[in-house]
Structure formats: C-alpha cells, structure tokens
Length: 91
Image (cartoon, rainbow, N blue to C red; front, side):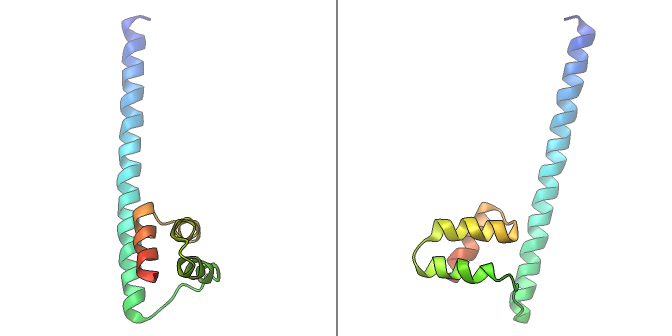
C-alpha cells in the first residue's frame, strides 16, 4: 500500500473514532436526562404504566435481581448501572 492508502485508512479511523465519541457523549446526555425525568416523576408521584414493571417487582421480591435488572433494561432502555440502581430501590 502506498502513502495515499495509509492516509485514507488513518482518516477513516479518525472519523470512526470521532463518530463513536459523539455517540458516546449523546448516550451519556440522554441517560442524564432520563435520570432527571425519573426524579421529577418520582417527586410528582407519577409512575410509568408499563404493566411489565409489576413483573420486575415480582422478580425482585422473589430474590431474582439479575432477571429483574434485565427486564427493567428491556422495558426502559436504561443502562446497566441505572437499572441496577432502580432494582435496588425497588427491593
């Protein structure tokens, strides 16, 4: 491969890394907004009406935290830490 090929590869890698970095920052911002909305909803006494949340509560009561976390993430789209924290608050 000549120098031009290496330059194109380097530019391509830099672009991919830049895009991944922006996506990661956007994901973190969305997670912060979701946490704030959850706090607002909790403060106002509002609940998410997804019927599967009752299943999450049932799993927590049965001591099945890992399946509860997985289901919570599926329902809410939350990250692992956020889901774990939410399940801990339930139990």
